[in-house]
Image 1 (cartoon, rainbow, N blue to C red):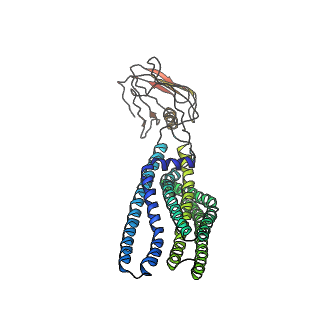
Image 2 (image 1 turned 90 degrees about the horizontal axis):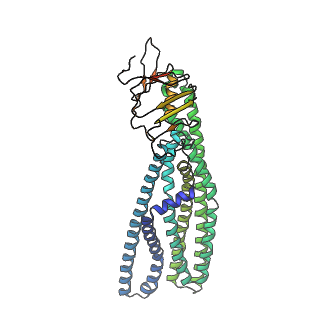
Image 3 (image 1 turned 180 degrees about the vertical axis):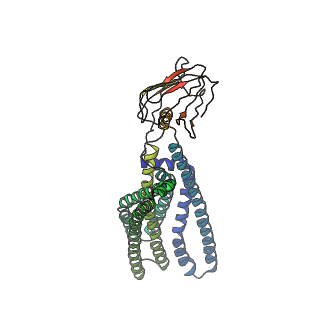
Length: 436
């Protein structure tokens, strides 16, 4: 799964709310763009004529326009925010399910890094729906504004139609840089979070060996690296905001200057001048919204890449292919297994057995349990079905003059040797009890 596929899946998974939200937010932007147009019409038909009845109708129409405008924003924003929150929750559940998979994962990330992916990255990746909704609504506002300007004066409308795409392309030129710096920032945050988790978990040990000052210095360096990465991302974000604002202001000044000249030469009326200046001032808002949508999309793409790397990581343990249980074969069979402190261990467990394994070294018991639990990926073993009729119990002696041992038990009615090599073991009848 790639970052693009994950983002597209997020939008598609909430397409109902997204369609409603985008349509209603587009209605909000269209009515907002219609405000200067309505004011210009009112000036020409009501104020210039001096009649009271057209003025009352104009006031009533303005009230209706603003009522639609405000309710459209409230309804659309609610739908988009709900989709974002539901998608954030779904992504966190997917990450938790992948991390808690009993087969393990090959992400190469520590617990703190996975925590950062499941929280910060999931939240930022879900913001792609905000980017889509804002982008579509802003484009709708630009279309309405451009058509209105074309109806007032064709050269003015063409100037806006040419200038706005150039502004959008200028904003998009900074998006790859913002994506890279946002990705570096998220990686630095995850690294620092993982280091903090490790330090808290091993605080007692660090104090025991007197290394707490070195650990604090290491965390301080990591935190400073994260701060520098965050500042670089913030600087790029601020640069894009500044470029967007500056270019929008230049476009507004150009349109207002040309329209003022047209009004002085009686090419357009006073109402049309108000409409043109109002639309030119309004156009700066959707252009800025497109720049913001580009920033959000860049951050979402960077976080989606980290999420996709975790969700598409292969399992640590390969899944078996057996689908039936053969009663004549052992439920679990180890043949000549060597792992860590174990050396050439054989073990066969059959249904209904009680098997006890005595290990003279606790490391042998830990290694054996690791192999049996399937947490040793470099070793393979055969298992038929699930060990439903066996119950595994680990016992560790609390001390004494006797040699410490660990135990592993399953039910049996016979006594036999079931393993050899360094981890010596004997199986005995179920009437025997553990003793220390």
